[in-house]
Length: 280
Length: 45
Image (cartoon, rainbow over all chains, first blue to last red; front, side, top):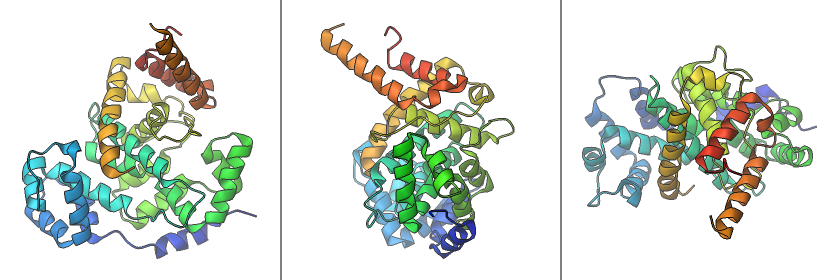
């Protein structure tokens, strides 16, 4: 019996470490019009590990800076606060789950897909009236529940992947059959635990909803970004599959073929650089 | 188009068919597949 009891999953989620306070502050600031950049820069600078990761990313060739930056304040002055905030939250979130000790699950394709969905969600949001940073972060995290399941219930997740291979079905369907719940439910619980903005929690929860009717705008963007990222085959996973695309999704988004083709190009361009930098 | 280019396009086409083997059965999935084929320049195949 490989079913995962929801209450046990929630208990384990609540035992996971909270995100560092500075990351919560950075996420909260994405909703604010007046952000005290100096205060947030000082908070990042006080977290040595986060500062080191952020500066490593900021100094990578992807950002093409003429000279090396050595402080968060310099990085903000050159790249802008929003870019540095995005780099810092990405670095912090990607460092949350350890990839060691789980030989049955390949973390690299997982993060490659997450990065692809993040940059695609941001590109889509720029054509809609949606906060691009919210879209990027929600795209990055849309499958995060899968990492909770892999790390907290490894033998059950091995059985899930075996079921998928045997039945040639979507991983979501395998999770629901084998575990009795799925990564969208668990991802929602984790983003609640991490006190993410409610629209992001909702997007993680709804990204596999069967219909797009009544779904929140940010959730629509994440649904579309997830499908496009799989369709562009960016994860490097030989067993990758495009998920079921919810009914009415493209009509609800209301973007023309030309805009979507432009989004495909933006996604591939951004993905190539960022995935090298992030080591996905 | 050279023989090598034709072979590469054929491989792309086969990969797309593999990626969309479950999602391509719905109208929404078929629309996305058509767009990706257009993006990859595979419409002629």
